[in-house]
Each structure stands twice: as C-alpha cells, then as structure tokens.
Length: 510
Image 1 (cartoon, helix red, strand yellow):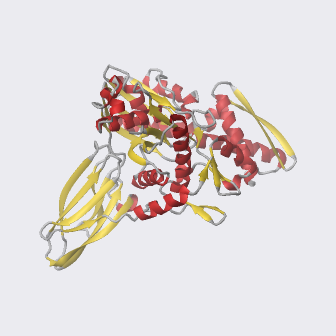
Image 2 (cartoon, helix red, strand yellow):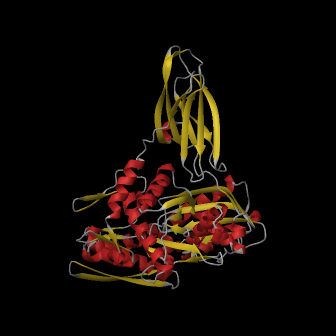
Image 3 (tube, rainbow, N blue to C red):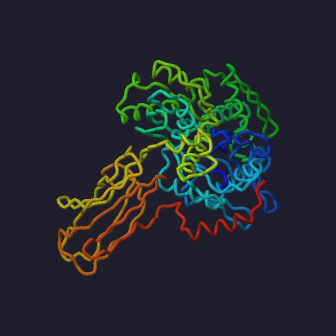
C-alpha cells in the first residue's frame, strides 16, 4: 500500500510531508531541493506549466502568463485565467500546484502517491472547501480528508507533548489568517473555538509597502509604479523582500526604476509597523473574539503557537506577549508545521484503516488511537417565514463552533392551506436576516398532493469530517425527499471534475 502524504496548499507557498519509516512526519523537498514551493504557476508558449520558484521569478518578466495567490479565488466561479484558447478556473490552477507537489513526492519516495490530506484555513467556507477537494481530485489525488490548518499545526506540535494543555494557534500565512483555541493531550486534540479572515495575510502587509514606495516615487518623479503590470510585479517582489529584511534589521532600502527614473526609499521597522498597525489590529480583534467564544482567559492558555511565515514579523510575537503576558512558543517551524500535521492526519487515517506499514512502528500504533475533534467555523441555518410578520428569517440549525462531524434533525410546518411545495434554502451565517448570510444552495420539496397548514416536513443537516454540508428535506408520510442542490458559485459536479481531470492529465507540469 502506497504512503499517504500531507499537503499544505498555501496562498504564497505550499509544502508536502510524509511519515517516515519510524512513523515521524518529515518534509519532502521539491525537485529543486527547496522545502517549500511557491504557489505560483507560469504558463509558457507550449502546453507545459511551470510551478514554483521559476514561475515566481517570471512574474516580473512575463506577468500576464503568471498566476499567483490563487487560493484567494477558491470557490469563486467568476474567476477565469485565459491562456491561448484555454480557460482555467481556481480549482484547475490549484490542481496544477498539487500536481507538481504530487510529482515531487513520487520522485523522492520512488512510488506512486495517490492518497493525501490537504489543509485549508479554518475559516474557509463550504464553497472553498469543496473547491479544494475538487482541486485535489483534478490533480489525481484521493483526498482522504480536508483538515483545518491550525488543527494540523496542533497535530505537529501536540502529539509529542505528554502534558494536557490548552493552546492557541495564531496562524498568519501569506493570504489568510486563522486563530484557534484547542485542548491538547497525548493522543487527543479537541478544538474549542475558531475564527479567521480568509482575505488577510502577509500579502496585505506587502501591499502597504508597495503603496508607501509608490507614493514616494510619484512625489519625486510623477510616475505611478502601479500602472504597468511588469513594474508592479517588480515592486511587489521588492516589497516582500523588504518586509523579510525588516524582520531581522531595523531598516530596509527599496530601489525602483521606471520610465527612465530611479529612486531608493528607506523604510524603518517603526514606519512599517505604523503603516500596517490596522492589519495587526484586525488579527487582535479576532483573537479576542475566539477567546470569548472559547470562554477562556489568558491564564487558562498554556501555549500560543505561531504558524505561518508572516508570524516572523517581530510585531506579531510582541503583540501576543502584550496580550497574554508570556512569549509565544517557537517549538515548531511556522513554514512547515501545517504540512507535517497534515502528514500526521494522513497517518492517523491510514493507521485506523489498518495500514500494515504504519502499524509496524510504535509511533504508528499510537496514531491509530489518536482522536481529533474539530468544530464548525461558520453557523448554518434555514430560511423560515415568520407567520406573524410574514418576513423571512434565518433559523440556525448548526451553531458556529459545534464539534464535528455533526448531524441534526428538526421538523418545520407548512404555513398555508393547500400548499403544494416548500422552498428549501440553506444559509451559512448566524445573522437573523438572510440577506446578511451566504446561500449555500436551495431546492424545493414537491408534495404528492396539496397539504393543509401545519403539515410537517423533516429537515436534516449533516456536517461531515471534511467540513462540508449535506442537507435533506423529507415528507416522512410519503417518503419524498429533496436533497440540497448546490448552486453557490465555485461548485463543480462530479462529471465536471472528471472532465477537468482529463484535461489536466494532458498538461505537463515542471
């Protein structure tokens, strides 16, 4: 039986890991010898696609054929990248990145790799989770499980710690932010509360540097660096490099040339922290929200884990120390922890299936007895009609931070005589006003004949281990069932996924 891998499919960088012969997680370097791979795809003149560092470096010289930050588009059916006569959606581009990681793993391991656990931000919604699963399938992977990134980080950290702890995972990556409170003991991880922002990450900090340099260039030379795509990409890479420099030095210099003009701008760490303070404050507000949801104080938190490359900015651990009264832990590599935790989760699933190779090690046998309990990152409800006011409202069926997998049933009733059908609308969100929630999908249950007012209909909500919704409406007296039709943007049918996979199979990825 081939080994299962863990994949951290990141906004800016991705990584792969596997359990070694001793049952320990280790990073698999890519074909270029790097431990992380830039999540960037470059479409050349032929049918081949380059993924990784070469693609990232091509963003300046050939920006129109480079795709970056595709993770932020997952679940967005309106996003299309066109190259020649071909069109690529977010799932397909993510599949190219996954295909590169799969090939690199197979090259190093010397065997086919089919099974994988893929991580997603804890705050990813239903559409983005489904899109990630589809990307894995298009890449030729059997997706064993979708697991939240903070939970994966806790798996990388928690299983080696014998003492029972309450930990907080502060995960600031290149494009997303999550914060999660969980209880960790040997052999068991229980998520208590989670929250996040899928549009907040290191890329947004880079944007502030770009604006700062651009303003200086316009004042000095009257030239807008953001008007030309090539110059903008050059500025982005220099801004990212300056941000990294400021993590270890008190100042950084950014030199830019455009329209025959040149300017060098010096940026101090203090200036950088001032211009990005509002971004850090957004993470602080979410930390406070999760602490409230978890009904816990800092005195009850034993460890704060920093995950994601953006936590290397000094202001992040400084803020955590001010809030918690203690320095955060640096026990795990912030760039690699998520992939390693995904590999541990893959090992858990394979061990529980009876994989002989994993169960041959003491570590593997321990994994077979490991339990991970995660929670919903969003609330899910159903649209009902208030009989008194005749207005629609959201009735929450599954509350946010409910342990998963979870299944709930309830009965609702027709509101008029001779009713021939009922409309079934599933919402994501906890606001009472449906307009302030996202519609997951909708359908109708048609009765065999008109029903009187007060006729019962049974509604079932199932939230599975991949954190994906399954919803049903049933007329129990006749056995008629309406299964939720997924209509939210970013959804693909199984037939569409298979068609996309056949197309991707013909694309050469380097």
